[in-house]
Length: 440
Image: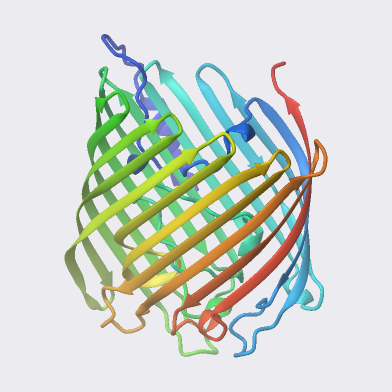
């Protein structure tokens, strides 16, 4: 954490207040070079300069709360309470949002799973000068129930810098932190350069819960040049570097031995983004990628592979849609080794009436180990998930949401998944939120 924030502090400290002559309208940062996720809010939900406080009460039933213990999944009901506080503030040069949401969950029968969550999200965008903008994001989560992190689900990005998350462990203690820092400089009417860094950490405090998985850390950086070839179209090039480490701990009561792998990648991509309307965009990117995977005491594996991504985002007055596809070689998610990954996801929300909104999110990831000949390497597998939700505000401050989540995974060497690969979860939540305008 200290290293990450030292980089962020340095970013703001050394950036000069360049003067600009002859510049035109402000350029946008296309999704292939931005670390931000597409917004899934419909236009009528967008509000700024507000302080939000409230709480969420959730009741859910999952048919697989103790995965990996046997071939017969154990189901149980859970009840959670999560107070929330969120700040969204916009000024002429600054846009900042902060959200803090601790949580407490108890189970009806399996009381050993009772837990306390921590969720903290920060997003700060600051215009250092008329043509220099910096953006810092950080998301910290501590939980033993991955479904408590996002009931509606679905994060769609257009960047290949996003870490690979091929495995989802529904019930296991885990701590994760994702941070992103970006700076852009528009040096002319149609020209922009910039750089970004992504830092992610995934930690499993109790390795015996997740035999076959380990802790993962990823650091990546990118530099880009973007040119506005038309009023609403951008073309450019970006270079990306990433290094990630996965550590598999030894577990006494199993055959798992300690091991560690490191993967480095270098990628050069061309990208194109067009904004057909202010709320509709399409992006394409692709190029060559070189990777090197090392695991002591075996020789380092080096090779070339293509990297490609496509994404789109749309926000209408009553509906929104975001979708992406990517093909990349990388590592992460607790798996030992480097993996060729094909992934696709989509999120759609539709306000079918003034007080009724439905949403759906789907995700698919298929991974194949490029170093499967190395012992302890996982051969790979696939993950499919789907979520459907219905939201209905009862009053100005009270909202009800219900939904269904299905998760299917296939990873033969990970007992926590292979013994019971399917999870079904139904939930109902009631949220109360008080909103106070700021600066009015």
